Length: 100
Image 1: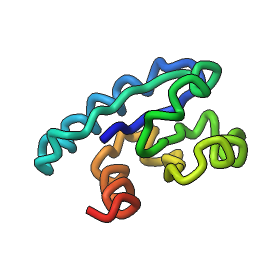
Image 2 (image 1 turned 135 degrees about the horizontal axis):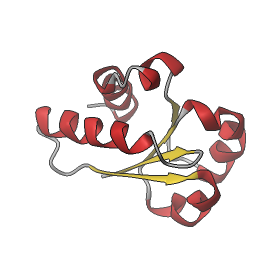
Image 3 (image 1 turned 135 degrees about the vertical axis):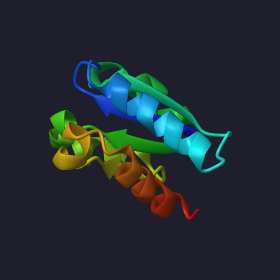
Image 4 (image 1 turned 90 degrees about the vertical axis):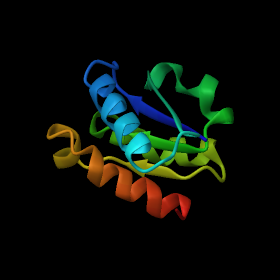
């Protein structure tokens, strides 16, 4: 399972990526791979992602990414959860979207 976090420049998203990887391990999801990349590179990798997470900085691109992603779920990380790096809240949203 591949989760792709899409951000503006990728600086703060790396920390969210690490925290989500911790959540995956905590919940026994060793099959989950989480990558992060800037929006300008995202078109290349949409085809192999099972879920897209958008950082608050790229919320303006959500409609476009939903169209490009097709049947792949696209979730927006809340400003609060991103700012406080609340990966546990984001993991709950991922789990709900994936039906875990």
